[in-house]
Image 1 (tube, rainbow, N blue to C red):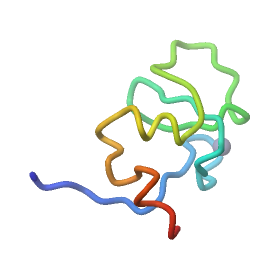
Image 2 (image 1 turned 120 degrees about the vertical axis):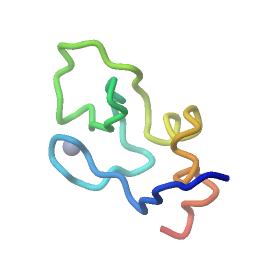
Image 3 (image 1 turned 90 degrees about the horizontal axis):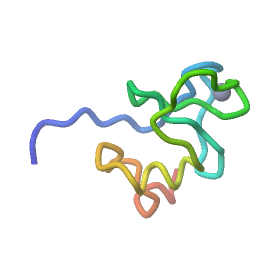
Image 4 (image 1 turned 180 degrees about the vertical axis):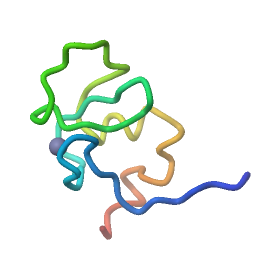
Length: 72
Ligand SMILES: [Zn+2]
């Protein structure tokens, strides 16, 4: 286990609103999470899906994995 910055919540890169698990989001190439409703993707996005899917797919979201987020 290396040093890790732990962030409790993820905010949309456009509206700065809290991203919820059921929200459909884009993940951009800088690993910024953006609501799909906030952005008309004209550039290549790294990935898209519900935030839950993204969290479970990428190891850098370990702190946000669903089973650790239930109390939020
Ligand atoms: Zn947003």
